[in-house]
Length: 328
Ligand code: SAM
Ligand code: SF4
Image 1: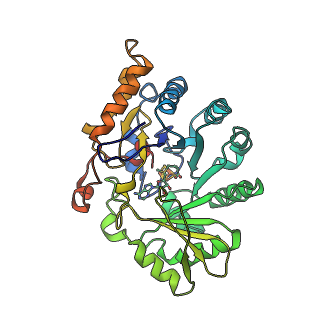
Image 2 (image 1 turned 135 degrees about the vertical axis):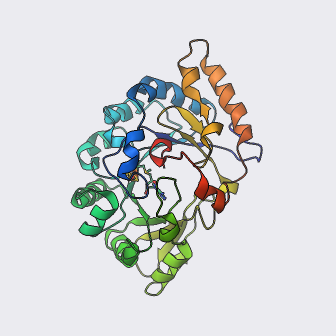
Image 3 (image 1 turned 45 degrees about the vertical axis):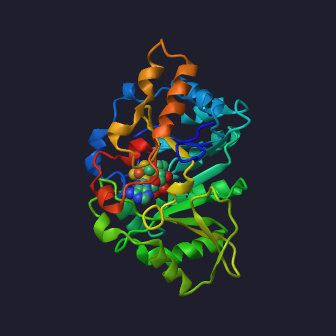
């Protein structure tokens, strides 16, 4: 079992499949950082990922989410998902995607047995979608959401609200949740160093909630204590509204997450500084290390996980944090 020094059991691994992306979200991948992407040889191969999934499954991981960058831009990702089918009955596999390539890859994804799909969507308005992502493909994302629902899977929608950019769409997103019977999750904007707009753009979830409560009654939904989202039903309506509050009310005390970066480093937190990550690729590529050695390295290293994320002033100053590589 993966237990840290604060008795937190870790059962959830997020794997960044690639640090490449087909969108340029202003809060994650503005054009300026694309030239810092890793070389292909630095990215873990599928065989290395399979080996690590085996190792992690032996030490208590039972939920794995593929993320990125955009996981579906990686060549062979859908074949890789299919190769996992029926191999790990104890692991629930999930994907977080921007939805651009989802519709065309959906059949393979469904065939692989993946049923938990989160789709990021920050605007329902064409012009604002272009402003936020650099892409005019909003209709592709909406069409992917429809297709996923046609398979009787209800995707969760991840929405980052930025003051002055898309905060005028908060009620539109609630309407979208109601109309489509979806779970829309408002995620607080986090200050990664590639987004100098954080100071002006951050909007605490309480402000977002207040705007919603001018028109709707939100009723706290029962939920699993391991879930980081605060879920609410919308009285008298279908759909769920959630708030993910890493900034104003962090959830570190119940953290069960580990993160594997696209280049094979293990991070215990989104905000783990570069010099505190564990480079598993070194051990994977050294024949002297057996799987049992690598699991031992992981089990020991987790004891050094910090009790909680750095405070806001320190967060804003963190350098070299690249959401694409870490996997949001
Ligand atoms: N490309 C995929 C996508 O967009 O869903 C997966 C990777 S993306 C890094 C994962 C999630 O991180 C997305 O929901 C995105 O909105 C969120 N994210 C990225 N940068 C963020 C930031 N600075 N603050 C809050 N959420 C962020
Ligand atoms: Fe790409 Fe996702 Fe980051 Fe947007 S949030 S730039 S889609 S990785």
